[in-house]
Image (cartoon, rainbow, N blue to C red; front, side):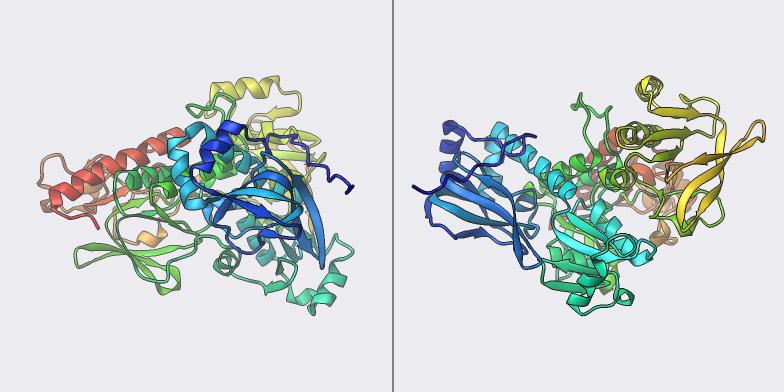
Length: 559
């Protein structure tokens, strides 16, 4: 009698077992297939077009690395396979191999997506499990490897790109990992050749661009042809994602581009606790992933990373110039490019960015400062959320606030939670003046802006949340901006643009419309917007209603 292969326990809700009713529902969309020992159901590095449920036998999930197979899990009757990439079209990071012969239910992913709309409870169970599995893979350091120096700007760029896109990967530090040199020698590289990316244990990319890495791991990169649609959404933060969901669901041919990752600044929030419908909170990354899947189910197309570099008009279309020489054409445009983080005005900041100074507080950054003292700088909601999250991982968290009132820019629920949290110490009227350390951050010099008193505070990491500046350089003079560079909308835009004849139609310009008819601005990039996730989502969805009116009054047929 053969030895029984034990299954992986479901400790986090990542591997629920489907009941007979759920399997019967899925069976209407798929077919039963026999399996033999050694059969490979899906491969790492390739998109998986099929959703599998194990009916009998056992299937192992393995990762190949250093010419060896590492078993990450074993699954039997009622377990379904795959992870988030199966729904988003990414190439897989793992391989599924049959270890005990049996039978599987195979459902085409296209049919699975259709089923989700008809069976929301089952669809949400699958999606939730996939989101948890992605988090587990990130924590395990599965996926591709990045080898480089912590002091290399390109290495930091690749790590940030992977982290912002929630792509499972492992960072191998030349300064910390004793086996890094040996691994590089085995691959035929020297430390001077780094950073390098190792995919599937065999393919090596030397200092790839973000777009090259995206193509290699199967992210939805730019289409080969010129994009023509009803709507192009520039920026995939909460406002842009809302515009994508509502635009696509209401029949507009919708394309979404973003220069870095979906989710925008919100994706760097470890937990958003005041977003409607999530009483226990939701991470910014999960919110973004759910929105992308939702938008794609309605037909929206995403291209990441793609950067908009210009805006113009031609033959009745707006033309968005993209990097790498491509263009996107549309009858309407939603500008949702958000804002970039403001930086501390201290000498030597660049030396510590990405290696001690961070502008996001996700699990990735938290793992870099386990049990260490850290500082969070800022007085808004992002700073408060970061302080609470980091208190679960760091040795001590000090929150430095420039004003004398924590409740001035922070929601009351966060203020109360911080005051109850013994792991967070709040220092009001305090600003960072210097960073201390030789290559590695050791602490800061902080000043009380009322008394002028200075003190040194020990810290291995500083997390900066002091506001942001708008991403509007690519717009040049095409739309009217306020004196801080944010996009003007509504009557303010028309007055600033100085072009009154085009706006003689009653009711125009619309509230979110810029000085260009048919170009709308939503979210953080818009002048006067409320910097909250919920308001950004509201503006993104509202813009679609206004775009329909614009297209109808302009007599433009949908693409």
